Image (tube, rainbow, N blue to C red; front, side, top):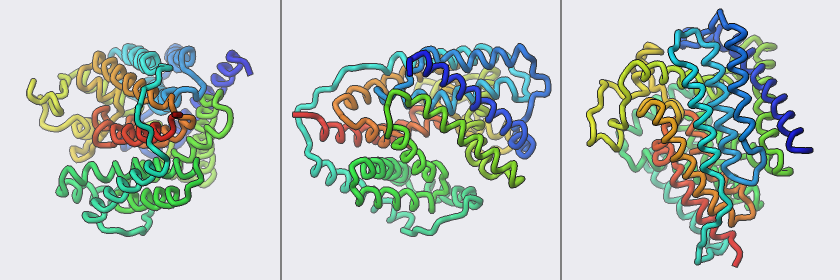
Length: 428
C-alpha cells in the first residue's frame, strides 16, 4: 500500500471514529451525564462543523504512521485521546467560549512541535553492556523492593472489586495515601510502571515469571486503589503488543482502526442493553473527559490569572493566586464540587500555567523527552518492549500534568527501566 493510500485509509477510519464519538456523546453521554456538565450545543452550524473537521484532519499531513519511532505511537495516542476529543468538544459543548479558534490552532501547533522535536535517528553510546540475566535480576530486585514498600502500608489481597465500587475504594485510598508520606505516593505508581513493563517483556520474550508477576501486581494495585487506569494498563500493554505484531508500517491505521471499533462496540452494546456502562467507562472517561476538561481549563484561565507553576517547583518566584489548586478550582467552578479533582492533560495544564506559551513550552519539553527515548530505543531490536515500559505514564499525560507524569506517575522511572533494558540489547 502506497503512502497516499495509507493516508486516505487513515482519513476514512478517522471519519468513522469521529462519527462514533458523536453518536456516543449525543445519544448516551450527554443525556445521561448532563448533570456532570456534559452538555450539547443545539446550534452547531455547518461552518463550525467544517472548521472542526479541517482542524481534525490537518495533523494527518505531518503525523508519522509507522512504528519506526517510539514517539510515533505516543503522538498518535495523544492525537486520538486529547486532540480529536478537544476539537470535538470545542464544537459541541454548550458553552459560550471566547477565542476558541486560538485554542484549536495552538493544539495543532503543539502536536506538530512534539512530532518535529521528537524524531531522531541518533543512537546513544553506552560502553557497558548488561547481560539478559543481570537485567532480569535487576528488574526483579526493583519489583520486590517496591512491592514490599506498598504491601507494608496496604497489606496484600487479590480480592477484585466491582467496577461500580471503584470510586469508594479510590476515595479511601486517597485518604490513606495522603497520610502515608511521599515514599508510598511514589511507590504505588512506580510498581504499576515496572509491572506493566514486566508484563510486556514477559510476553515478548516468553518469560512466564514476568508475565505472572506483572499481571498479579496490576490486579493487586487496582484492588486497593480503585484506579481504572491501572486495570486499563493490562489492556494497553497487550494492545500495544497486538498492534506491533504485524508490519510496523501501518501502526497509525491500526491504532485509529481499533479506537473506532472500540467506540462503536461500546455504543452498540450499551444501546442494545439500554445502559451506559461501556460508553461511560471507555468513551466518556478515556476520550470525552480529556477534551471537556481541556475546554474548561481554557475557559477558566483565559478569564483568570495563570498560575505560573507557583503551586509547584516555581513557588519561590511568585505567590499562588487561588485558594485551591487548579484541578479543584475546575471541580468547584464547573462541577459544583470543591472536593472533585478535575485533573486535565498536559496541554491543559500548560495553558493553566502560562496560557498559550505554556502549551508550546510543555510540548517542546515532551518532544525532547521522547527524543531522548528514541536515542536509546534505536539500539534495541524490539522497541515495543520499551513502549510497554513507558505506556502507563505516557497514558497518564492524557489526564495529568506533564511534571506530575514525569515524577509522580513514573515516566522518569519508566525511562530508567527501559534504558537499562536497551543496554542489555545493544550489540557488542
